[in-house]
Length: 260
Image (cartoon, rainbow, N blue to C red; front, side, top):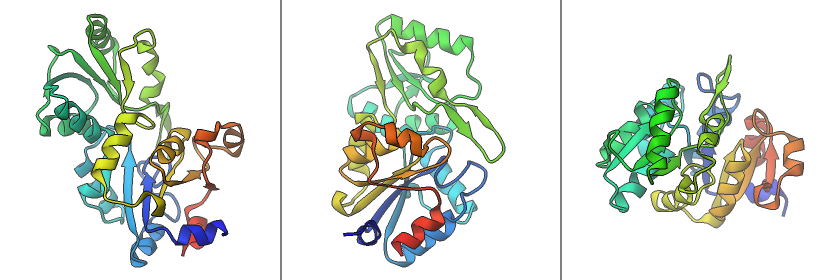
């Protein structure tokens, strides 16, 4: 079976946001049309991200404002995944390095944000500084646990490339009580399974990082690598089997033509 025929048989499409659907302040060419055509063909389109700048509501509103209608239940974020995980494991307090979106998801699930906590949530924070790093390290050195929301190294807009939290994660390298909560971590995968209703054999997981591909494979889905930004053909050729996508695409308009 050719890949185009196989893709056309799928009924659930899970699209990464940053560097796949958009460059933060502008949609990728063909993104709006792809989503609209998929939905017109009675296919489900959902979104995933381990960027913690916004809550699920925030991302849904942002998508809608850019022409892609979305509800909060269409979006899965690492902030929500972490909030559910902590709540299920009776963790009620956390020291948070991050911004409003992450804090909203945690607080809505009963997590108190305080410096008097044994758990550190380390997310993308554009006001990250020495004081925050010192407090986070102090908590971990005293036996606390740290959850890393993302391994993303750069935050890309249509005009600039800025540091993402992945560049700062290494401050926790010497501690074994560290867990990746974002892609491709098991926490993200397990909460994703509980969040969406889908048949994995009829689903596609698309993103622009090797972490996206590995996540999709852990979920048992067909995986697509969006080439550009974080992914290159050279990087894919060198990738381990667990990070090699079933197909690659460098343009969402081309992807639409292969599916519809």
